[in-house]
Length: 374
Image (cartoon, rainbow, N blue to C red):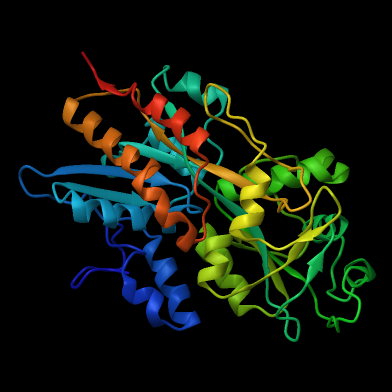
């Protein structure tokens, strides 16, 4: 997780990437490490003369993959050092727009699972690019003693759970989809995000698409006033920590976080009425029909297809069209270019989806427009 002699509070290139982590930490240790890695650096790193320092901040959803990329890229490009702070999509956009931030918070790129809104693009003075770099599933991870595998949740059931209407695990609506499963008489505790989150946006955009009551009361947003018995935490890592340590908990998190924590995940009913488990194949199937517009911002809130997992999202790096100097412009462009091409091979093993060739081509075309100020 961190290099020798480095604090867990640092978010330099070493976070979440050491192969020693994957080998053998216990569940509780991994929770602690993930939470520790989400803290921000106390100050911008000092680098040796001739070394380029890039800083970024934003979404926690893709942070496992981003940090794997950062380490791999640095190993082949030792003159480039990259910091990434997984502070949430909303905070990533704020820092990218440089609104009321400190010098410590200044970034060369942002990251968001919501891309940027039209209003935010205007706020960026026409100096922003949204580059999709990976994609993944939002899963419902759960902690249900005696039901470690095979749980199915219908659209009515999981919408009802997060509306606070279904409060016990042995509720008839849940039991209906799980014949023969001994569901416990245990109170449901929803684990949700406390911070402004693109993961929240993707999940609530799906709920908005499938449930009229959710649509009328909450809609899709990065921050939600969650009803019912909700336990709140920062980051995907915080939500996985709640689920891992709370009997009866269920929370929405990126698939890669649930997989790293060895959490059980529910099969969800999709648009075709089939129950589908999250996997690279089912998530890729869900994104297959998505057509990227010119600004590269597209959402798939309720994908078609019998084999499609129902909750998926792209995630974007937020870049400037014009950087203040040529050195930074070139360094950002080359790192993201590498991520779109060579970096994609790391996606499946980390629990993400490799981008389709057509998406890579459109993203690369946009990336080529980055330049330095005159």
